[in-house]
Amino acid sequence: MNNKISENELNKIIGNLLYLSGIMPNLKGYTYIKEAIVMVYNDQDLLGMLAKIVYPEIAKRHNISSKTVEMRMKAAIKKAWEKFDGNEFYKQVGAEWRGSKEPTNSEYIFLAVEYLNNL
Image (tube, rainbow, N blue to C red; front, top):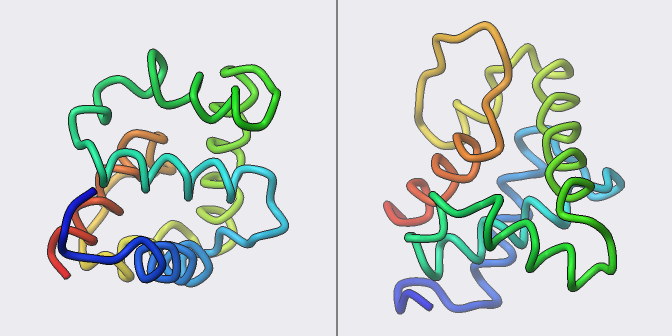
């Protein structure tokens, strides 16, 4: 784990970031996104291995398939995107999105980890 942020504080910051960007705890993808961000924050090489390592690890913890993890994360990001017209997450992390579609899971996780690295 990076020494910059304690595990407890990291979970609070990520939870707040997700909430403020429209990904609510009642969405099934919320927990998976949160876990993926923590995993990638702790080992940034995992960003390029979401499908190979991150999704399967989260799936194993929750006794579901990797595909279910991926799809629920994508659905949560899409729902937040539609709710806030796509801008709120980017405002929260201090970035600007110029696309018309919601970010991919990896883009979302990357921006969240970059935000955490800059705290």
